[in-house]
Length: 438
Image 1 (tube, rainbow, N blue to C red):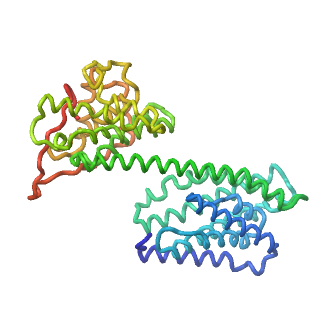
Image 2: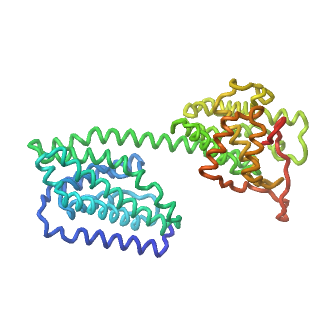
Image 3: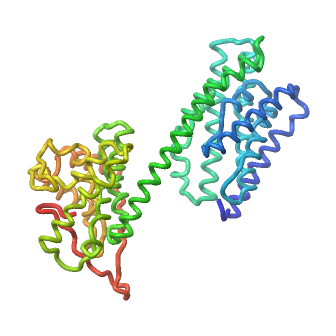
């Protein structure tokens, strides 16, 4: 949103006006101002902590406690100090703060309005369980729905994202975390109205605060992992320009195969890493061989065939990669034992390597490169099926075919080199011993 289109600015202005309209009845409602001030201060403090931990998110328990305790205009006001005072890294900072404040105010007001109309506040005051859960649950749904609608709108208008993609999955992704925070907010509200008062309610925040901190550390660690992998892939792309983008696509195809095989999310992510890093060993191969015009000599081929071992040496100390390290080492092995570097056969080849081998060959065939045009997806699958059982694991080939039938494939064009006249300068492929060339 650094160069914000006029239509996006108008959209933000409209949401800000809606937020002001939500706050207008504040002077006419009966509310406890000290409760409002305390909740607003708590919300602002949590937002500051999130910024210090570099965690992008909102601490919803306090906002939802306001939804369950206060009239809708007062609940909407709770969100404003934290949103307006929280630091913003990207420009325009003022517009971003205004957008966040207005979005939260409108969403919290809508959730509080629904909660109030369903008699939720009376149920909280009377500790009327299980009835109090119903209006609280509906309020959480409304909060997630309004946040998702507004988020999707800004993505369409400010980021020029297609509407279907902008709103796809927003509601479901937010519902789980906000639902958990909703339970904590409800506990806060009930204890707040109990004889023990706000002090007891604040104790609810301690475990939530700790869990939020742990979650923030997890995201920071995950971001560091992604940065490590991105740096390695960029180094390979710079050295071997004609296959630029290949690593990311192999990672995507590996992930599709893993999901089709029913692997859990953690293992699927590791196999995505394996696909992305499978060629990292090219950093150890002389550039003149990777970019050589004409056929390779047997000695040059042997040097290039060392790249899986080079890659394994580079990544074996990166603990979070897990079985991806074995895939880097063995993705050129063949079921018939004629692959490299160790000539493993059948089940001796790690499953992760068998996944990446199929993904690697598939992308090599379906990508346009300087020395040949891309093959159609159907033709590439036929070639894989011909080599299944000798070069590739038939189970992985079948899984890829099923995944492609369900989701399709949209290969990107890899980087071409030219001779200065704009004409692609052809390069030879590094061929496998038999079958599909990669």
